[in-house]
Image (cartoon, helix red, strand yellow):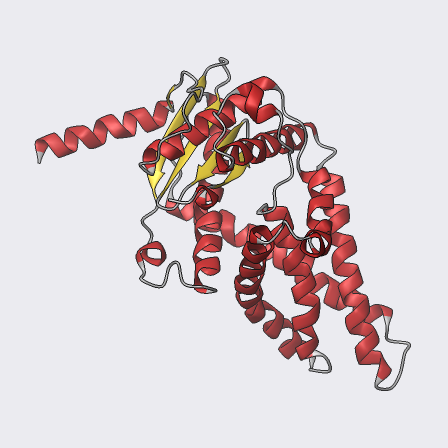
Length: 323
């Protein structure tokens, strides 16, 4: 498996690392220890023969990131609140996703449309449509950057951004086949060319271009068309992200993708050693779950199963034995 198949996500006091067929999770427990778990990626979309096909793979990754990422984000919160990784029902996760996606679409897709329309009502003639579209794009960029700057001021989010940086640094070390140790991981940057922040930058730029196809349409067509185009834009953005990461050695590619790197100065922060240790533990879990060896000489932090995960595993074993 190519080392570039590994990605990740910051959690509350933890990190999720994703490989081709499984994920690994490590969290800093309130008692100071590291707790961990792993699971296989086995959704219907993941098992589909087109799961790794261009464009379709972006939809698969987005789906799994939303479902699995949201579940583990909520579960990491329960570890911090109660010391246990409480398993969440499908209904709870589905409701959380619906609310989150609704807010995201409303804030970043529909709100700019309404604000642009209101701001350009005084302009008459064919120029009004073009102006409204340009204003909508500018508003979308401003809202996105302002949102990141606002949430980055909260203490819990700042720590999550530190774990985000630790995740990127650990992936850098793995991609360079450096032993996963605190010293080696520490020398790498917190920004990464396959970061979700960079994906969002590409998504926003593409949305400005593709939403222009709806210029001049009535309000309901504009709204429904934008919502329908979201997965299409996401699929294209993922492919552009991969291309940008593959050819980043060229100066002109680095220049084109600089906005994504700049914004990562907001969404990633320098972690402390304890946070890097959690990121390494998460990567070790993901490597083992995907049947991949860690680079020789890597640190393997001591950890124990997430409390609820251990209980569930024990219950599952008992069921298997009874069968």
